[in-house]
View 1 (cartoon, one colour):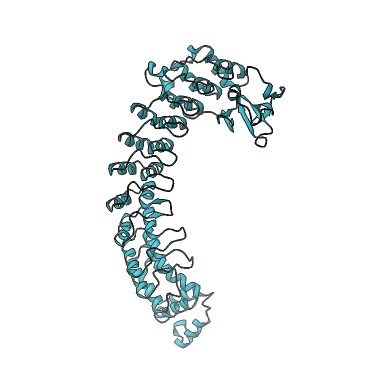
View 2 (view 1 turned 120 degrees about the vertical axis):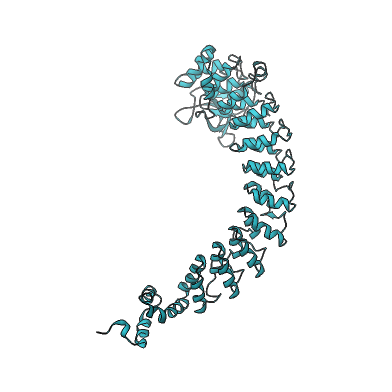
Length: 517
């Protein structure tokens, strides 16, 4: 029996033709790889067959372009692959960074603005996003549209900015792209680079003369964006280049306010800002200062430098709360401790300052069951154990009336009854946590907007706001009512993870004349 290679070439071609190119491409490929004789005579047929089979032909050139396989690319091109047959090869090579492939395909008239089967992404976007400078230049020299948009409505220049490709950004600037390009109608390219922490891009844009005080759509400056992005090095760079440190946005927030809200690495941003004579006690529309913001979010690392720079701890917000009261309200023991770290005379100025409803920091800590903060306040000299609110309640009376079944309030009551036992040593003080136990729910008083404590009762109107109007005891004691004083209110308490009516007589607002407890 004759061997396969002993057969005439004509017969071998007949055998080759019997292999279906759409289903037996693997068999054809295996046959070509059997020996040098078959490879020499049939490899070109394999490539031509691949080209004629549309889907595999496209994948073959794209595969080769993505991997930089120049020999394979030349064979496919010689076999008849045309720009119309493959629309993804140029995209694949642009992403992978194979300049020789790009140049070869462009020489064979592949479209530098081709979008491939996806219909929106172009080679220049991919090359720019991946930092392939020379490919970007080749594409631009071949007619790539410098202003074309991808599926996210970004130009190639904008992609380079967002991805931190400073070398590519330089190319676009040299080709006439504006250094102050507004990206997606929001902020300048410098602002976007600052928010993403792309320092090299920022340097490139600043060296080109980009506007360092450019205002974004929300009135924020580039410095605001750097602070919000939590990139201290970007903040330092902008300040070094002369950015104004104290310009407010449309909500009145300066970069320092934003830094106190951001937490995280922003403590370094705060340090940089405080070195540039910012107004440390600038107030927002709700009366909060940077110190109050830091205390309310538990940003303890910001409190000490703010106080050292002269921040006033006695300033009240629109609700009459000091920064210490906000720390007590939200359960940030470490922040409360940092606020009280000064001398006794300084602490006396704000440790027992009440809000508009007479709630002192000690009362708020008791109301929400924050044991650590109660101990800290008593240890640091609070004298508000019996100081009453507008509802006639003091920290001591509240803890006494609500301690049943609540272990932490029992401890609070014991400390309030005998402050000597509340004293905390240095070790315990250093372990003060900003994480408080759950003591409030999403429901809020519709007057003061304080969260309703799960340890307390409150009044509820079943008519106003579609059965969704609540008023805390202190606001009610201050004379506030629901939307209609003729409505009947029901007292509610937190029982087994839900608010339930207290089995008391309903309260008629227009006839109520009692002292609440």
